Image 1 (cartoon, rainbow, N blue to C red):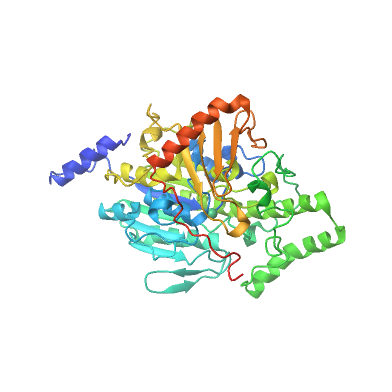
Image 2 (image 1 turned 90 degrees about the vertical axis):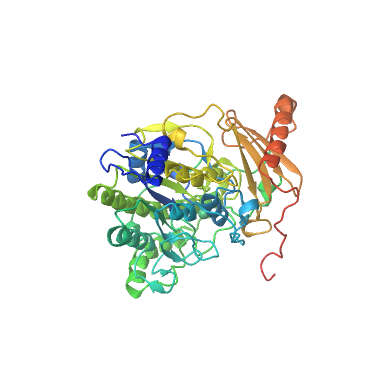
Length: 508
Ligand code: CA
């Protein structure tokens, strides 16, 4: 049975008129399970062609649903992405252009609207917005970034410390809610949100030995010299060479381990650290070593996410919920996995601009599809409202993916996306920039220093050589600049940033 927006609308209209509904023939509004991770780059998902790891449970969603091969964020940083997912708005409108900001109390979010429409709503895990969650019948969330081990969760009235690895515990709590608190008479929204694989990429006890005897392939741009681009590329502070801390590199264990956890941790890292000290690496060899240390920990954190997703998918199967539950796997943005010699995100460059987006809904979609339309985290709120038959507020700036999920990309679907990053000065010192990306090109303006980049993504997919200002691209450049101006007007971007320049570093 294929559930469409039309059939949902008929169902709701019938219900509103008080006519009896036939529980056998009437379609039911789908459940929504949003699986949301933190900093999980698409090129660390095997369904996206990862050459560095396997993610069998995420891949299962792709095989049974739709993979969006061109999914992007509006602003590649944590809290702003979360606010955009909730509100369907850019950060300059919802109140969260940087990690320092919080949602306006007036910002309408999709959980609020689904709750009003009769959905049972819950969120478990990482929240990372500075206000108490609203629009949820149930919430149990980490405060701020939270801890990788032994996390404290906050509910409406109290807090609880759980002993163990946070990715496991978030899953335990999500499954407990599904099993014990879910109202089978109503559709549910469950936001299942991991801290992993955010910095400092701390592995769980079950993954400490993973990749121990392997070398992970290096990215081709590991030794990028950042020439042929804006000066912004050379003034960042996110390189493997210069900017990793002792904690990032695991010379320091997480600070809140129990004695037993610490013993397990030291059994894994102690011999590794001794071997490093004995090797006396420097120069490119040291960068290569840092890359291996970093990427293995990052991938170990993802392996736990994938294992735990498998537990949740099994539960949906066992309870007969899988067929009419929309499962969405996505992350708040991408990440540099040694690409360009970097870790972290923030840039409009491909590795951080992209995010994984996979949707499975057996009752409403075909299996094994790939959609290459330009889609964004800006579209999720509208999509969830659409599938629930709830009107999408005019203030939301994205567009429902429901037609695409049904296999038909509308002829007037967007042919470019708009992006803006505001957090300068700030961690990693990435200059403020905005730009547009089409299917084939990307134009970026570092507006405070008035420098530009233009990339031909077909000729130069790694974005190593800006062609801005070259004669061969002059006509296209003019077209893209006009298009950028019109998109800034369309999305009501203020001419002058409302985000102040602050003293940096804090207290400095
Ligand atoms: Ca993030």
